[in-house]
Length: 150
Image (tube, rainbow, N blue to C red; front, side, top):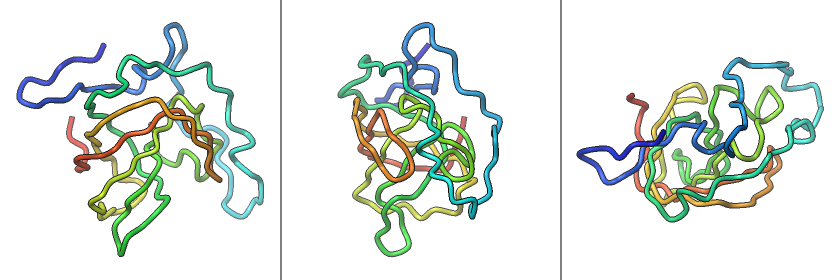
């Protein structure tokens, strides 16, 4: 259940909060790891999404996850997919669209690597976006990106 943070003006969300009621979460284990050079289009293996939640449209939220870079400015990432587990969209078929968030930020985030978890805080909403990696069900305009802290 999402809860309002005391000292901050955002709603803490978990990945399960993005699923329609009754849908089970995606396992955090890495199923069916694929070699980079296998040549398959991972997005074609993406499970179908059973819908999105609109409860947090237009709200400022904080969500933890892993960065899959899409666009850079200098050495910082300015657009990326936020995923619930390490390696999603890269070596495994991506999770359903309702478990992926397209994040944009005006201040480039210096990424340490794909295996570093982050917290992203910003305006959240439902989106329908298709990239070469996956279909994405949500968007977030990041005000802050910081190393993950529970």
